[in-house]
Image 1 (cartoon, one colour):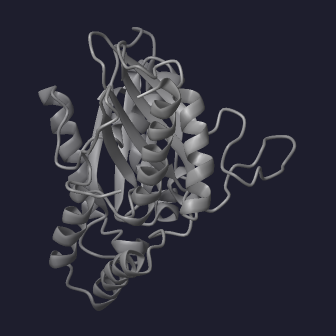
Image 2 (tube, helix red, strand yellow; image 1 turned 135 degrees about the vertical axis):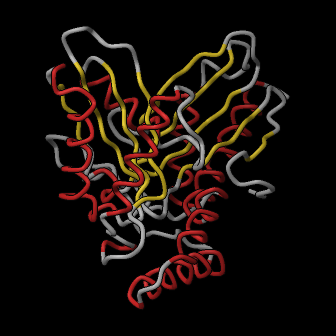
Length: 299
């Protein structure tokens, strides 16, 4: 396979997988929604969940995105140093987005700052957003596709706290934001929390927390305990599906952390909506792929 043929194959895979991820929720999210649906007792909550699952079935049957807001495309790339297209990934992802916008179809959501003009193809300045992680001694690439819709991004925030505010300050920050803006993100929510020493580190970690599979926990026992306590507390508020009250508020709470400066304690918050379109694909040097988030998916 020539380099040009490899590029074309790679672009085609990513374009079709991006389109697929907008129409089919990942396995873990679908399973969690099914679980939450079963415990609801109020008529309103049952109606909202029925509408969600009807929506997912129609998206599948009609081959359309499961939410009309297909977001601003973000790719989190873990690329091996031996992957043959390592120098071409940014170009290929941009071309894949252009192609996916037509194939999807995906709503045109890339609006240039200052010019206030929609590019019409979901590609713009630094968009699709690409986050890089280089993996030594590997010839594969793993790509996380995330469609960050407007509702998901509205509650997003980050702040540097005074250290004396401690972890209680982090909890207060999260609860204040979720109870003020959380319904904008179409509950039940996935809550991503980043903790570090500066605002940009905390914000980035909070978004990366959304990429973790549901049901996983932070490897630090104290962090895992805080995840569970915040999840229980948010569920006790009974925000419910669509923000219209119900047994639960969230699908999960994920915390990611980085060591901090002694004088600062920063916290970031990102949210995922019920239609949490996070998809993961692995591609090897022969351009063979595996859909990790959607087992057995044919794209």
